[in-house]
Length: 428
Image 1 (cartoon, one colour):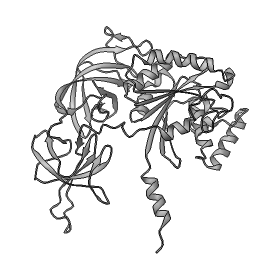
Image 2: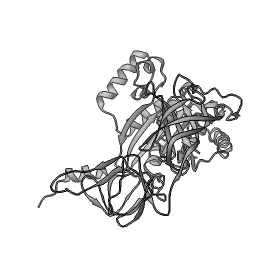
Image 3: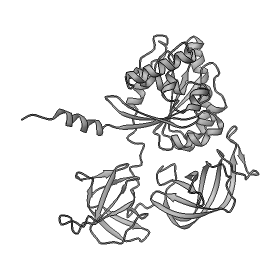
Image 4: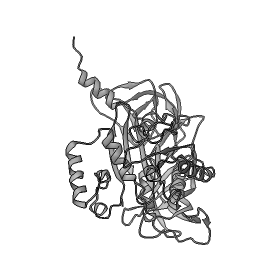
């Protein structure tokens, strides 16, 4: 009997752990070059891609092959040599799959960093070794902390331009640590690199024997992300009711969605919100199999023992562990629209699978993103501003604090007239 090894390889590939990470930093700190180097040295680009950027680099008169062109995909970016949108890239190694969000460095693109970093396990914040810590370093560190990114890695780049001096690295590290101590970031690390030369990106640097921490790729492949999801508070927002109406599954009624927190098993006592009715889990299914347990962030279908009226927007939770339920919600928002926020304005709100409408009840303060001071007198919330507001929703939401669960603790606001997403919010 022979085994189809290609099928085995495919299954192994699909089951590989996925790490999402984002890059941030000031303009010209080398974010795009770092990603290009990471993709090139890890053999994750095709030969014709490399030839295309090699030709493009020659036309521009660059001394080196400009690996940043791998991510600067927009024409305006290529012409200016900057990143003005979020560029997503995917690659894989034998140990892990990765999705990269290359985000802009300009202050006027704060909203893009919020978008790119909202689902990230890890943030790479680049610092130019020659310039040291600048305002953008503090700004991006604050946003990473605000978004609850579990792991933050400061890549001290362009070490080749400061003669690979350990003193320069340590000075920047001390400055960042002093600032980060005021924030609630769980895991902070530091890495001296040269994206242009490839030092400590995929291969260990011969120029920095004083650094013993391993390369960036090694860190990305080995950092523990299994506990990044909340596996304590069971939260299952119902996305769709499954009724096959077939002969084989004539009486089947399942509730499909993506687990937002906790671990669910057949036999568990659960409660359905908002009705408050209780039941037991009869079975848990994926598209191909029945499971003995399921956990965040798996997408599954849950079947209950009792016939309960459940629809999209309801939430299945454990009896003894329920989320907050309320209509007055305090959030930190990042405003993303050219039209400013309207005090007492009405917007559509989306929270997990729940849709409602809301009123901006109160604007508490705006954050000065340069100094991180609260501006309580300035209530004008414009594009890229971050502020704390209170919303009043038309129906109760089932939520957790964002710091406890990034899925049930986040919302988006939508302009009902244009259907544009105008803000992303973190419940506090």
